[in-house]
Image 1: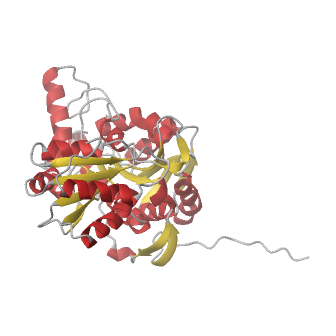
Image 2 (image 1 turned 90 degrees about the vertical axis):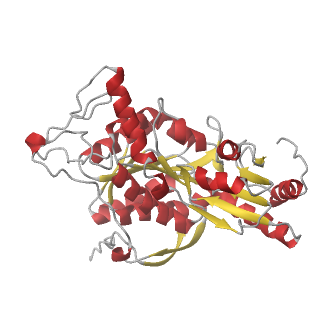
Image 3 (image 1 turned 90 degrees about the horizontal axis):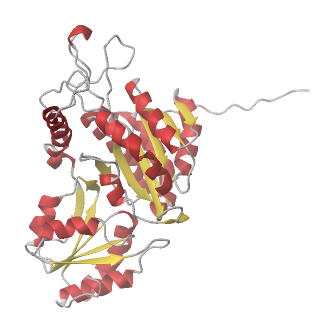
Amino acid sequence: MTVRVQTRRRRPAVLTGEHFMLGDFACAEGALAAGCRFFAGYPITPSTEVAERMAERLPEVGGIYIQMEDEIASMAAIVGASWAGVKAMTATSGPGFSLMMENIGLAIMFETPVVLINVQRGAPSTGLPTLVGQGDMMQVRWGSHGHYEIIALVPWSAQECFDLTVRAFNLAERFRVPVFVMTDAEVGHLTEKVVIPTADQIPIVNRKRPKVPPEQFKTYEPDEDLVPPMPNAGEGYHVFAESLTHDERGYPVMTAEAHNKLVKRLIEKIKRYEDEIVDWEERDVDGAEVVVLSYGISARIATRAVAEAREKGIKVGFFRLIVAWPFPEKRVREISKHIKGFVVPEINYGQMAREVERCARDNCQVVVVPHAGGAMHDPKDILDAILSVAKGKPVKGD
């Protein structure tokens, strides 16, 4: 009797070519292309497909996949893996994201480059596990305690799930900060064409390494860009990763002066380079009377309402957040000086709209088109808001 053993074909880390791919899978492939070789996670709808793909693919490229006992452990594991010198990622949704918050704060204080994919669903609490939401947009900014800066990207297609996950790793490595890919259940479960370039066409950023011998090294002594070089644990450097307020050596220092110095640097290392980080897409904004500002799946729905409004002769522009945090406040503030109002559809009751209101102030009207979650907007609701703002009419709920 002949026994045939079927072995899995070993595929490269970068699957160059055209694919018909799920958004969640595209996030996983973007991570692999960026050099991610460690994933720790706990399955949770609608992000489980990210973990599923990583479990399949990481062994093919010499990486490690671990299913942890919960999301708290998952976040802790990727922080540890990053300090060991590996690019690391996890993926989750609503309730899991909440559980990760303490260790997200730890990663911020440790200045640890990691990436987290949040496939947003209906909330609060268990909410709507299989249906869409965008209610975590303020949680990602302020969910852990204290004042700090983070970076969050928002894809609206399977292609951007790949592209922005690569960018997320590059930003994490560049600034030594957790970076978040805030997709949603609809974008994560879209199956669309994804074009993956060759490996040499994908820009890759790796963390700065120490240039001094171990005896001269200080764990948190920054370069001129305010970002400290980062050694790998086990290379002979004395590393003190400390969650307490600490000095450049990593030693705890319990004074207001030390705390101000540290927190100010954690904020400024992002704020100083805000213009380098922020990103958006805009169409027909110059000369517009109304601008629809949105992100993720809501922005895709909004394009139909914008097209219908333009057919009716309304001068309407379209502004899509690609990077939600830092928020592009300079551009939004400038636009607000020249239009009647912003229309902001999002699958929550007005989270990013608060940022628009803050930037617009008294310059123009800001109208939220809310949705509690579980489904996408009806384009007619967005169109009605556009028409009302264009005519100078107050909008109910504004």
